[in-house]
Image (cartoon, rainbow, N blue to C red; front, top):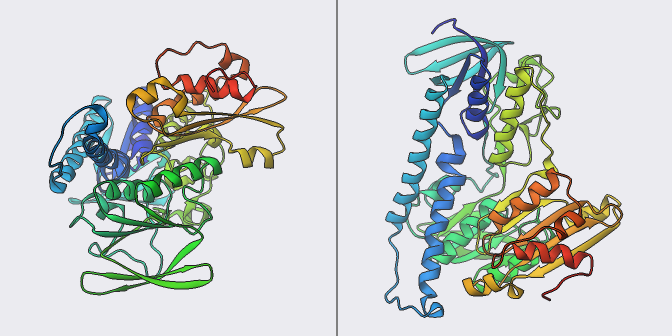
Length: 464
C-alpha cells in the first residue's frame, strides 16, 4: 500500500471517524481510516457503550432490591461483579466488531497503526509490519481524547483509577472517592454506590453536574444523597497519600483541609485531546488547551485538514462527533453541509436518576438577555411514572416570551435520556410553544410530562 493515494484519510476510528469514513465512501470518495487501537474508539470500547451496560446491570439490581414495591418476592439478592464486567466487555466487543463489518461493507480501507502527518496531504503510519506512506487531498483528524490526570492524583490502576480501570475493576470498592461530578464521574459514582460502595463525590464547582441547569442539579443531588452518596461541593482534593490497601485524601473545603481514608479513588476531572505526535504544530494547526481550533465547519485553517469530535473541543459527545463526521464528508464531496450547533446537541447522563438536557439553562438564557417563560412538571403528576414506580423527577422547559422559541429543556428522572430527543427535534425544526401545545402526546406515557411542562410555561397546565 506504500504510496497509495486516497481522496480522504480519516485518522481515528471512533464514532466521528468511522462515520466520516463511511459517509465519504457513500459519496464515492476513495477512503482510508487509520486507527492505532480499537475500531469504534473510546466510545464503543471504553466509554459510552460499556458504561451503559454496567449501569443497566446496577439498574436491574436496584429494581430487584425493590421487588416488594411491585408485589414481587426476591430473596438473597446479590451480584457477581466479574460477570457484570464480562457482560459489559462482551457488549463492547460485539459493537466494535460491527464497525469493522460496516467499514468493509462500504469498501473503506482500514490501516491499523499510529499515524503522523509529515506534510500537508501526507500520512505516515507505523504498523506492525513497518511504515506505510499514504497521501490524500483531505485528511480528517478524529483522534479523540483521554482522561485528564492532575499532578499528584495520577492513576495507578490499583488504588487510583481512571474510567478505564473503573470499567474493568480489580475489585469491588468498599469506600470509594470519586473526584469530579461531570457525566463520567457521576455515572461511576451511581454504579458503584448502587452495588453497595460507600461513595463520596468531590466537586470543585458549587454544584454537582455543573453544566446542567441549577434546578436540575439540585434535584439530582437530593436523589443521590437519599441513595446514600456523600456530596462535597466547592471542594478540592489537594493530595493523595497512598498506603497499603488505602488512600488518604486531603480534601480542602471551606478553607480547611480534612483527611479521609478510602480504598479506591476514581479520578474523573475532564479530558485532554489526543494531539501529540501527529505533527500538527509543524503544519501550522492552532491548539487551545490540547484541542484543535476549528471553524463551524471543522476546518483547521490548514487547507484540506479537518478536525472532528473530542479533539475539536466541547461538547465532548459521541453524537456530536458523528454528526461532524457526516458534515465534513459532505463538505469534502461538495455537498451542502450544515454546521453543528453546540446549543442544539443534547447531553445525557445515565446515573440514577437519569439527567438530560438541550439548549440554554435558565441562567444562560437570562444572561443572553432573553425575556423568558419557564414551565415545570413533576413526575409525581404523571400516571405512567407512578405505575412504573418512578415518581421522582422533573421536566423543565424554557421559552422566549416574545417569540415562543424553545430555548432549552432540562430533565431528571426515569428514561429522560430517551425523551430529550423530542425537544431536540423541536429545536431543530424551530418549533414554537404553540406547535408543542397543539401536539397530541400519547397516553399513558412519560412523554406527556413534556407537554405539561410546555403548558405550565404559559399558565395552561392541566394536571398540576
